Length: 529
Image 1 (tube, rainbow, N blue to C red):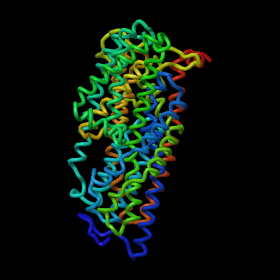
Image 2: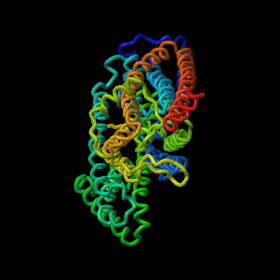
Image 3: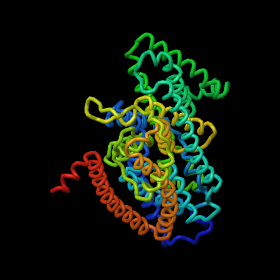
């Protein structure tokens, strides 16, 4: 603890008893806010996992959340045991004192919890991994200077995220256009599926299987064996082609044997498998990133005599990851999570009227862009109402493409060792498949496109907010000690209260505006009165 901090003055910690109080207080706060943060991740990141299945009305949201939540918890139990993000990722904690390292971890959670809550309250998807990266960057830079931050890694993360989004848009657009051209809206027609169901479904299952082998279950011993014996031996391309052919034959045989029953369940089944695969991988990989700062802080307290070098290399207990996975699944059941799901589904909806909000400048920009659209026919099926009175926002074909493409892109990036955001990739797949189906030719096209613009803009804003705010909070915690922690938590709670009030008011305005667009005669009646 006598190690000097690179590029910063000594903290304002007085006697050794006060140092001990600060260390214990910071550790307890970091651990408590870790539990808080996993719930916030469930409200936002994890909530996006059910969008495709829920939007296609394959499962209602409650059952989709239960199924995805179980997969998240199961994935957490086989998660990576080492805290890569906090140990050797964005910054080098071994260059900091224990006080400084704890200040970084506490500041990250103070900002991350309120940032994720604010975005979730307004139904805006945001990446926990991306926010965490920029929060660690801002906090480490604030107390340690340029030398502590791994700028190469930070730049690599940013480039990987942008490239993954771009690749997802291109791949999802092309695949959706090809599949839609072959099947149209005849997704349950046995004759059509006997001709096209095998290669379409086989390709999706091959991508999902590769995703689980490369990313989702890479820590499982049996999967490690398969990776070494097949994927690494023959290469990913040959592996994918063999899987594609195998699944195509299996699907065709099932269609022949079970006829219309198999045809009716093909694409809904593929979508559910895709959702489970994504949720499992999310619990295994993204959860470790979310949990790493808090568990790193706990390890620092438990092994402080060994120094930061050893303490940050202590493995994470499986029970701790499983507990975090359960809290994340719990967050998926909250009201804010429902807003994130609803907004994501409506933004890519094939329906005419949608319930969304976007600022006026986004709407103006969207209308300007829509002037350049052609007059081609919409490829998406006509909007339908289910037997329970719910609108279909996607069909099962599009839902399965969204999840299969997302999984394939994430698996490919992971195979090259590139970090990607599950949230951003899924969002890009929804938008791209919608473009392929020409949903922006129908109904509230300007509002759908405006919301897309607003979400993308908010991603860049989130990165800037995360880095700058965490830097200031970290300085306050490091130099003011316990007082800085109290001020930070107080500011967190105040902002949450303010954001909740604003978000609730906006949700009410959006519902009223949507009702007015669906029933314009109400305006006329009020005007006549």
